[in-house]
Image (cartoon, rainbow, N blue to C red):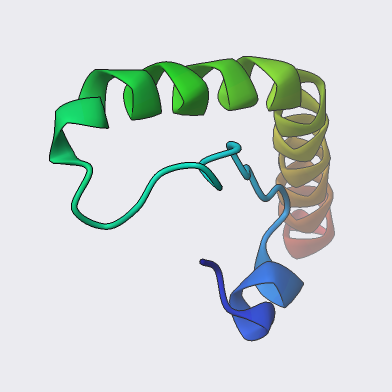
Length: 67
């Protein structure tokens, strides 16, 4: 589980549904990887937007620093 302070500083939080899995369910590893991959694919629009926003901030700071 992600703590609230971490979510506050994250641009994107990916939360795959693993509610049906318990700590000792090591045999479900591949299923968990697939769920994580699927959740990441679903989050790609938000991830791309965060990358673009970060790039714009970086470019703006570079311009401001050069003037």
